[in-house]
Image (cartoon, rainbow, N blue to C red; front, side, top):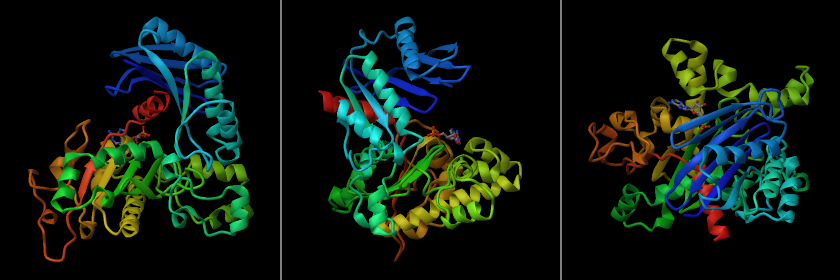
Length: 419
Ligand code: AMP
């Protein structure tokens, strides 16, 4: 039973999971938080048991040493668990990496060279790789969040700005959350409801038109045609696109100049505003969808507007991606909000019956950890009007919920590369 340790290094945190890629189970996992601050904290979970330690954690090296100690003390022992490789989540692969790679010194240098494109994320990723290579003598693999989108069609990847300036500074659309979009769209493509739909329509799987909505604290949409990503909502950075927990998503770039010239804000102020003080938090006062929907239910007007803006943006993107793909066969929700918030799923397809999209209220409300169909259909308890074929109506699409699992996706890609 070979296992893979998956590491996700943030600027002040280190998330980890020991994964058995064969069975898809996580044997243990946890997070070290507040690295570099006075009050560090590590939470290690295995077999339903949780161990928490609070102590200052000076840097990522100390954090990883602490994690390795916990594996020995609380289990499972990495050696006995058969660790064969470490898989690292790396946020930005630029145009250098369109697939996972086994890490060597050149790869570390290349990830470091991409820091100007991802100043908030790649420095921590480099540090995480460096300390892990020192402490764990197994092959290390870097899996890039941008890789699934490396092959976006030029028309989708290119910003309409001066071409020479763009080329000089690496300005293009890269996309993020690629590991999740790839994992989810691959799972959708082999789901029995989807293969049955294609078979019934006599269609080749290469014509399958999918839209995936990854709605977590960060949020992004992708359009996938026959397994290839053809459009995505995040761009040069993870700031573009949908409304997120604390990020604005799409704004007129003119807002930036206005705030710099007339608002007295500095470049860093505007960066913080758009990345950390906008989105649901900026409009509704909270970034967590659970709290936001509670406020909406209590009649809070600001929260209501925040949710309306969030849902309006989602519907706009789904409509745009239907145009990009020439129709939608499957719309899939994933990540914290997408997997759990029935009210968001219902709101995101509200009024999109003309695209063949609808949710069955009972299926949408049911809670499950399994990949499932929530659109109306022959088995639905409540067969909504939109499910019945009507003359001239779009063929009904499937709406699905598919839990994402980025750690498992990274572990599988790591094993595939290291054998
Ligand atoms: P993620 O980034 O995928 O971990 O998603 C985190 C976000 O998912 C949280 O900030 C919440 O807004 C949201 N979330 C988690 N559980 C629920 C739930 N039961 N209902 C609504 N939103 C949820």
